[in-house]
Amino acid sequence: MAVPHLKVFFVVAEAVPYAKVGGLADVAGALPKALARMGHDVRLVLPRYSSIDEARFKLSARAEFAVTYRGQRTKVGLREILGGNGIPVYFIESPPQFQRPTIYGQPDDLDRFAFFALAALEAPRAIGWQPDVVHAHDWHSALAVARLRATRAGPRPATVLTMHNVQYQGNFGPEWPGQAIPDAGTLGLDRVLAGGGNHSMLALGVANADAVNTVSETYAREILTPEYGYGMERLLQSRGDRLCGIINGIDYQELDPATDPALPVHYSAERSAPRAMNKDALQRRAGLPLKAEIPILGMVTRLADQKGLDILAQALPAVLEMDVQFVLLGTGQPEYHKLMREVADRHKDKAAFVEGFDPSMAQLIYAGCDVFLMPSRFEPCGLGQLIALRYGAIPLARRTGGLADTVQDCGESLDRGNGFVFERYDAGDLLACIRRAAQAYQKREAWRQLMVKGMRLDFSWDASARKYVDLYGRALEWASEDRGGAAQ
Ligand code: GLC
Image 1: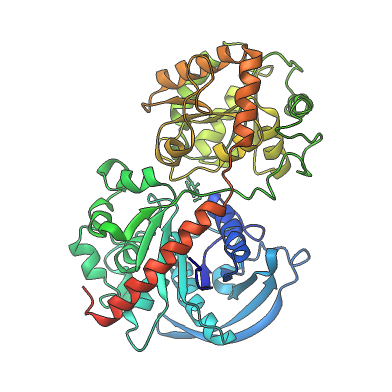
Image 2: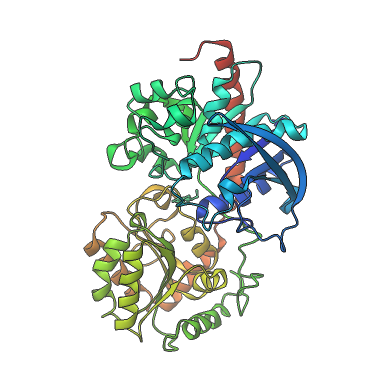
């Protein structure tokens, strides 16, 4: 069946290659490209952060318009660049909100992103383009969805809200919306609270979007429980079949060990032997002894509780007594920086900690380590395990969220699944799983076959992009029902 070509407007706080904090940026970079390849007219809008490199990205001035926020009219600029696959990317330029040292973590983040979400909605009019679907992501742009539903004058685009992580909600106190958004009632805040949702931007979006999704099927079920719902479970349950899960893909053009410019040596599933030279290069760069025969455990992660760093910290002393090496790259919570620095200092010949974000080192870890660790407490999708598979590192993961949907245990003889899986969020279980992987590494031929099998799997965006197009179709129907009937 031919799908009509849709005009889809992504409203998002980060997207590669312009601004990146986490996996959200990768999705916002790659999904639009996959949709554009299918013939859809996809455009993005982001804040114009001061960190965006003007020398590298030539942003041209496109329009100017006024945004009313907290009763004040502010002029903003709209800048534009043609991104990958000819996708127009727009930037809301408003220095008071976005000329800041970091993308997130400013004391007025709520106001900054409420302003962004409202300004983003003005952009299509300013450029004379009418989207069919507004696709918002996470709490930063959720207000756009609520605002569109509250504006009942005339037809409106359908709205889809994708939650990449339900823990981050943009929570506010009861007094906040009154000052910032005088019509919070019409945005459905009363309904959110009555439905047992939190005072939060994300809840406003969840209550009002025509369709809500998250980034794997398992996580979409998990968030209906108190353990994973972070206070949103009842509101999420109330959305019934309007909530679904669609697994993320990764960009198979950008992430290809046969062409990746960050790698000293290229390789592929067909020619996997040269991968060993990347292991060598990784050991060299990490300052570890050059030993081909012992497995390297690798990790590229935000240093956050979500990622399982507390159980890892408990397991590490015993792990580092084994014949393994460990390399971790990441930034995040200061306590984990301190901890990882101590571990690396104490075990100089076995452990290395690369602080900060070094993209070429990250790629070298995927291409050089043997086992890629993801012991997450929860994981909406997880992209690291998909990149690891593509690059020939065997993922070792806790069975949760998107990890459960993409990593299956290879069993004793390594001839099933694609990785190593443990169930309980527990340091002992993680340690046992690492021990099993380190022993399995010695079965060289079975390991090589497992690795090549992983490299041949397809986690590209194409299948998931088709699921998004179906979801857009349903959202369009639900939006027209919603316009016909009264607001529930
Ligand atoms: C968030 C989630 C991660 C997911 C990513 C992209 O970073 O924590 O699991 O893969 O968003 O959707």
